[in-house]
Image (cartoon, rainbow, N blue to C red):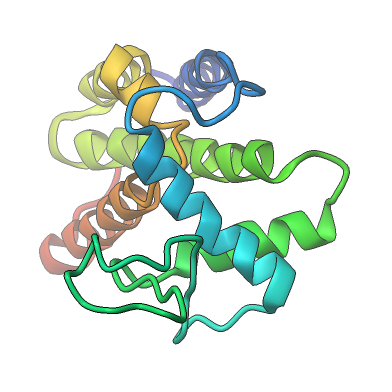
Length: 178
């Protein structure tokens, strides 16, 4: 497959994936896993309101229910809040749209990055045709469409994992695109 054709097909897959992930972009966080999305978004909103402090993330729950321990400061100690920091930075620099849309657009970007690197991994191992097929399937699977736009840390984690796998394959096996 010619190089330009591969790029065009990948671009079309990424455009399709982007538009699929825009579904219900402006809806409130009231869909599946809304409590987890609200908690993740709350960390970013607190960064916007009180300053970005990645080592002391807080959110809107002061109860002892999540950890079983008193939490009068509202600390949120789950994953490291890089995503919340990125969301806060983006919202502070582009305050035209609301915070939830900004957060969803960031995760859509990470989802598209994951699709591109999945293509490159499959291309390295099995060729361009399988790379495009892998990217297409990943782009249109309903589960991936939904979670690729949710305000959760998983889209960023998947993108970073696929990026590291790609560079591991390139470095460890000295593969080069066919």
